[in-house]
Image (cartoon, rainbow, N blue to C red):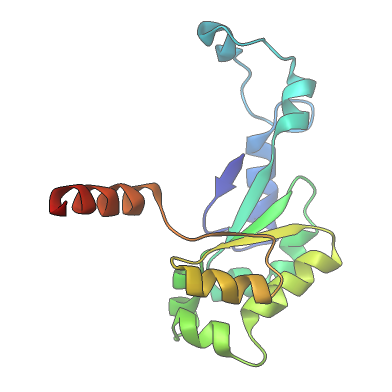
Length: 158
């Protein structure tokens, strides 16, 4: 799974789709490094079939160009960075989630209309539920560093 932040235009989406895949579908350099770890070596076509490319929508520009980004061959899913998107729209995440005509709901519908999965970073279980209510296919509730920090704090307090 390859996730690319700040994809704002169809041209950028085309560039990341090209960079993520091996020839003839893309321009990624081929180096069967998996052999160093004892894993089977796939040919470029097999490797391409296993690549899942997520474009991150994190700006007003990306939101404006969403339909063109979704129409880009090689984009397998969309992942929303709601904090950056909210800042770009001069609001906050909770306001976006609560809005009647939320851009977050628009993104989910546009993705589903094209049979493309959509996910988001929620940062909490409450926000995760709100994203799920909008139709998001998957939601991250925390980061690895956030979980490590919380676990370390709990261990130090215990």
